[in-house]
Image 1: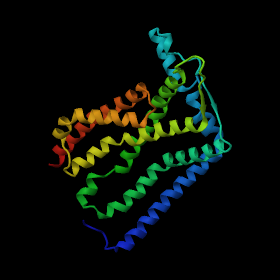
Image 2: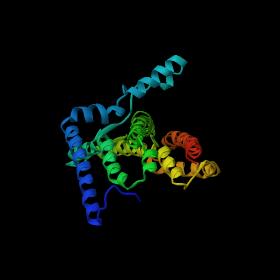
Image 3: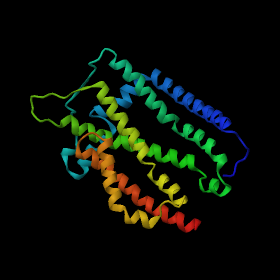
Image 4: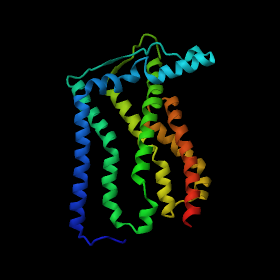
Length: 264
């Protein structure tokens, strides 16, 4: 690879160490901000999908009123959230703050990663990857928004209303509740990177439009499996996760075709 300057293996490790340290510091800074803003982080953001006046539920109710379907309106979510461990709330406060730190520091952390690898790229490779930080961050936040406003409330509503017997009450532990939300949101953010992954694989000559078309059925099966692994064990959440990923796969086929025509 073409390098701007010759560096020993130890020098590369030292440089990588500082990139990692700066990324971690950015995460810690945002985590501290989230920690001291617990009224917003918990009261508004994390506990938002547990309340019937959450934006998604209100939007569904308005849609239902326009089309004459009252079932879209959610008046109550039949569950309560409890903390059954002595340090449950405190540990969730710390872990959720760290997750929020990761989300908001993601663009900077990726930029640090890009700064580390870009000196080893050829000029044409740098041109092809121009704007990578913006597009990766954009897709990541689109996935985060999808996970928070679409996937999470649908999953919570389904699981809160699911009962095998009316005598069994849904009393969710705070650890289970917050872990479910963070898992869904982070998984959505990462899985929405599919178009960028296909872009770079196409540039590297590993895949092309024809291969992606031929293995479309296999890809759908893999997407369904990932949806089952990364969502709560209910079919609705899995389908809601899988549908946009299938759409992203189709978009990736188009991207691969454009890349091949542009750089062949």
